Image (cartoon, rainbow over all chains, first blue to last red; front, side):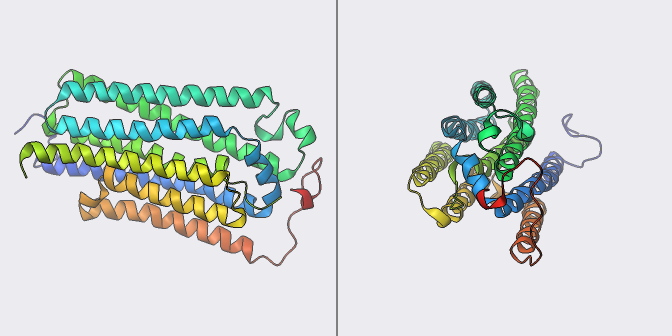
Length: 214
Length: 111
């Protein structure tokens, strides 16, 4: 039997399917994890349209928009890494994974700069800070509390994704993950794409659409 | 189609998907300054759904997965839709007065 096939599986194909299925079931639970927060956002935005409009208009659209391009591009580079590994081009895959990690670090750096700008303006989680002395609406406080909570949890997922991809980069570089076992990298890449999917919805909700509440 | 051509088309599809995603992001950003009013949110979320579909199909390859994997994905999305639909249905059909604002906040009429 092939050494890369665990004892509990009859073939590499079945093992690969189990890995992919396991990742998707995990992602389904992650969808539910974030769905509670999206439901909270929907509820509070409906109750406080004016406060949320003020929140969106005072958010840092430049940081958020650059990060959207960064994360979309990183999804492309990791998908291309899987494509290259399947064709046996491990070195290209390693390079593309390194680019993906650099883009992930870039995303976190921009996010840190964004939070720093908020703190400078007196915007802290929980509606604390001098910004709320002049914007005391309940909706604005809730907007920024949800903003820090949801983008913070998303940033934690980015960090976890970077750790997963870094481990996989090492395994591809050492020849432990090759074309035949590229499903392992594909599973890690699917997690990274999920992180991208969450951001695709966070961006319009927190940066783009103030709505007609004012 | 030759092997090399197939390979190129695979990488080309990924590049096209990225281009489409960036164009859609640009359209979303342009609408931010178009002041669409009440239609702004559904338009922005509609574009986000299209972008998510592109990521699912081209990057996550959900279309070529086995039925069990597609079912797991569909179950997650379905549960998300149920939760959001019930929460929004509750809010838009409420007949009781809304909760009082927390102490130290301005009246609800302003936010």
